[in-house]
Image (cartoon, rainbow, N blue to C red; front, side, top):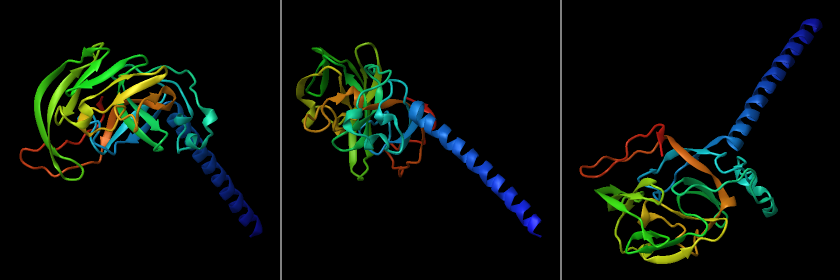
Length: 251
């Protein structure tokens, strides 16, 4: 009986050890992937509409601009001292890239579009974006009506904006006289970026000097590549836009 018990105990110990090694391997592979390759981020706000909708799960490339302490998963990097700043294999984003950044003042991740690079002069005049003195073209696409997260009815003009270099993206403008429609000029410091949301009148971005302001390149977590999926839903109402389910939609 004792021999049988020992055999069963030994078999159970072997199976437990094999399972533990398998789980350890899975965790190690996951850690490497979300640190060096890709990670998913949730979109909690309306600031990047229509490119990103509330509830979208976005796949973010960790390798596009190099690695920093913000690349580590589970908030590990945020617990490291500030002296662990800097990037390995670092590079600047391109104008028009959608990036996830770490806001050190609020200790949260934000997602915005890169509008200004180091040395650029950025200005808003009457709702129009000027980059280095040139007005950015925008092509009207009509209007959209929807309810925001609090249920308030919103109507916005829809434009396709073309950045220097030819990058096109769609923006919302509720008006051209909102508080952030006449600000600047801003001259982007070295190693910093000027970020804006595509939903121009619903985005607290680099135009808010006492808010997000300029973003140092070391605070960039990665580049948003695609919308994996979304769990968000809205109540369909006649004449109002209700975002459809989105699965694997590139930005």
